[in-house]
Image (cartoon, rainbow, N blue to C red; front, side):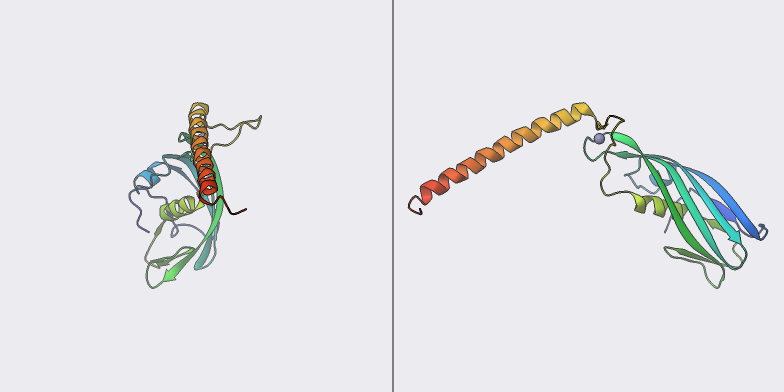
Length: 181
Ligand SMILES: [Zn+2]
């Protein structure tokens, strides 16, 4: 995946064998620079833990924070919390650089791994199809009340129209087939 500008680099070469943990802070720039418009702003922490002990290393990602997205119901922006755990296999003695969904192969000459493309992919794929404001402590929707009121009015008008059409159909079917019963 081509990702511009934002980089979250892990330099494997200077690390001793054993457990390591990296923390990256990621903001909305990662999504803006890739023109992914569904995420307007982000405040994410990505923790990458792994045990460097062989040429195949398992990166354990924990990504947590908030994403600013548009509510599908009222159209206002809101902050959605998100948390995900993902695993990425890192092969460090490959003949060529290859990136797959759950594996990255780097050559022995490569020193740095940029995990930004993976964070981007994990977050984008984790977005629910429908994004709607949550509810407050009393169970009331936190959607923009004014807009919901307007939407409700529209719905009432629409259902009245539908009723009118249904009535008209019923009426016409009666006149068209008066001798059926
Ligand atoms: Zn809403």
